[in-house]
Amino acid sequence: PFSFASSQVWDGNNGKWSSFVIRIGTPAQAFLVLVSTSSQETWVPLDDGCLPTDPADCGEQRGVEPFQNGPSNGTWSSIGLYQLGLEESQNYTGNGMYGHETVGIRIQNSGWPTLDHQIVAGIATKDFMSGLFGLGPKPTNFTDFNEPQPSFMWTLRKQSIIPSLSYAYSAGAVYRKTQAALILGSFDTSQIQENQTLRLTLDPTLNLMIGLQGIQASNTLSGVVSLLLTGIMSFLDFTVLEIWLPIAACEAFETPFGLQYDITTDRYIVNGTTHAMLQELNPSVTFKLGQTTYGGPTINIVFPYAAFDLQASFPIYPNSTNYFPIRKAHNESQFVIGRTFLQEAYLVVDFEHSNFSISQRNFSVGKLPELVSISPLHPTLEEKKKLDRQSLIGIVIAACIAFALLLGGAYFWFHRRMQKKQRSQLAAKRQSDIQRQA
Image (cartoon, rainbow, N blue to C red; front, side, top):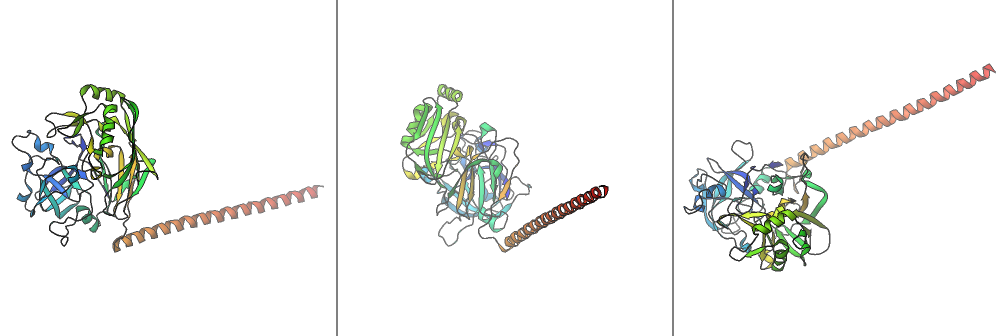
């Protein structure tokens, strides 16, 4: 397992998000990308995505500067132009120039994995301003299902670079000055608040589906309020950042948070006066989550107002504008809990065992990482040998401890017996001396 360190840069046109560095092509170009939990592909912006009429820092806003198109690189092998087909329920659109390309993790000469012949899409659409690094294990199919193209995660697993198809992720929180945390094949127990974990089952398509049973806010402009009266089933999908809720739930947020609905952008904005009041009040919002919409094991994930205090800019608004990241879902297919949620939560996904877990993230300062590998469902022969060796070592250590305890016990028993014998002999000698004196 390895920890994929963040770029230490906060990116985004809809909030500040902790990004990661990947390398594309030969010679390699670095891109700052965000994590996608619903995609298995790698996407990076092309120079067509910034027009002469766009702001001068458009390339920087999109995580790359200067641009160099993928097809100009020596290792690029074109597949063709295809629809991206991601977040279509949220009305995201765009095409991708797909091809095979070399993809590496982190900066050049960092020693981190570089894989050849990976699926990469060059994108121009501004629905996805930043590039994406997909964590999904499923293959990509273009014309039919006879030639599936393996994902980056699957290739890492096949080459035994990671112990299993699994990962742990938290998006980071700029207001806590805490970067994103991404670990492949493992998770970090130091990131999890004690007794604050909900374990769930992946659906057959390996999507992250969760029951949102309730939302409650306190210390709002209206005091304590319930914002979701009936539970819903929602996707956890951190490709998008907003939380898409039923219209009634969104409207329930309006008065307690002083939100104004902008019909042009389909977003909730916050004026300057209300923004100052909310920052002073610092309301908290609690999400109650379970496997289903009602009952069963649950967990409460608590968010400060700062988690929702975001600013949107180009191309959503010409100038930085305060907005609140909830969106109106017009049908059940649009129910999504986005990246905003993972500012305060920690996600562990194990594709091989078809389960995942959600925890309240632990922000305690000074805790050392405690990585725990996630075992594979079907280990390779070499992994079995390694596990056997580890088991043998464990057995030997246990046997040595048992033997040491046995020796210690025998010594203690023998020592006690000798002491008892010596005391008996000493008592007999004293009795004999007393009789002789008499």
